[in-house]
Image (cartoon, rainbow, N blue to C red; front, side, top):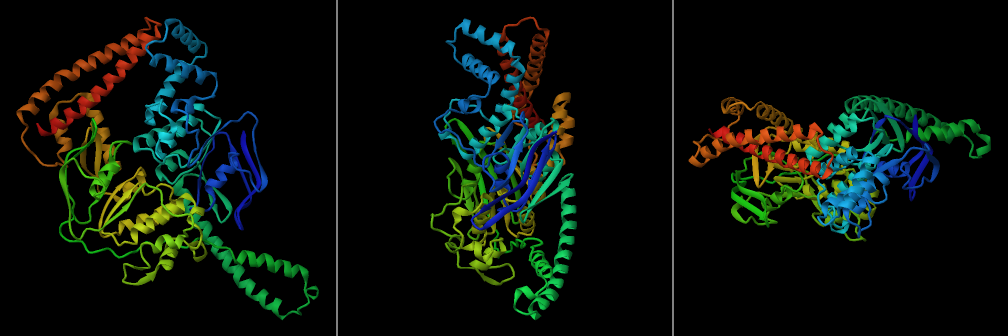
Length: 623
């Protein structure tokens, strides 16, 4: 069943056509990933297909009963509304009833009559299962304060609120622009499962190659205003794209050779146009257009001189940091070594960016010291948006840092030449920065970091809004980068290629130094979960963990006592959990307040057990 059709649509900005006479269709169950270089028009195409932007030519039609859920790059809301009003406002009777029920149970002064009426209405609408789903979505996306006003949210929080609203609405078709931006790794994996297991109809722009491979069953590439579709995953697309470009290059070269002959014929004919064969003149014009086609864009080459690094890089000695009651870092030490390649992972709000800011001196720890070597030159790529004046052009932004740049081979080039390495052609260098796409601005930010010749690169979510082609070349550069690399990224493919060990933010200020990349870490977690479920004695766990020891020491008296208490307490918690599950499954009561209380207790028990089990594992290593 065809859900959406676009016929001969065109869109331009000024004199530049992003796409012209483009046709596209989306049928039930299709999950299409739209790829292409930054500035090629992907976001504009999504907006046109979603009805947010009219095409200059052509038409877009959506099947009558089909509803579209749209997630834009920068969602817009009524700033005065609360999160709850934004997510649930005017979304149908079921959602309105769930909203009223949630408000009622959160206020202790709600009367029994009101609660009874709402529970009866929940029964009538069969809304209980849907309410569970709503709670899961809000929990997974880290949305807890529903009374907070939109105007007080960060950009990442706004994106998650918009995602929650789209998923809760359950539309027939989803159009998502960079859905994984601002999500932590656990949430991305949950969303991946949600979108790939349901009969979802989806069109999305994403640079996350693991996400793309798992969710999409078709890839559409927007290249030089034309759309090319490929049935299959990302690996298949890369292979077929290379074949297409080889064929296109051969055709273009053939057209150029033929054009030279035709140009010679045109020049030798009399000047009066009527005396020339009209069909041949028309054919020449078509040939000229084909010969002028770009086969592929200029290659982005990242190759800058790295400042010499001395023996001392950064020494972190017993640092701690808290904000109020919340511990961000608790007694963490590490001595950075030459060519360290470290990934930083953990849930949103765990303090990853705070940690990076402390390393670079933008923020001071509450206790402990951070001592950087005299030769350490930081290059810090942050999540903050590029700041510029309205009258600044692209080349002005670069010249603020340097007029010339020294490359890795010793060659000195101008700021304009350096911009060309970053796919900013000379005409685009004099474009106002405000006219650039989100990905082009991020690319310009990266350029400003590398132009300083750093030997210690700190990258905070460098993959956001960058196209896949730029990511591939950035990866190749970082693989050959001679200095230290420390990065926060939700892109698992990017992380797996580049890092050799991880700093894992586990909560309560604890940072685990894990030897391996992200996939290694996930595999290790699965092994630990199996161990906990089987409640095995400590010895086998030590065998599994002793391959990568962080240093042996004898347990203290307090640790021995804590370990013994945990072994007594965990079975008690497990027993209470089993008792609760059995009681809830027995169906002996229809009192929803009681059921809700049991559900909350079960949730708290699971949290306690997880916390105790992690501590038990830590202590079992020492025993």
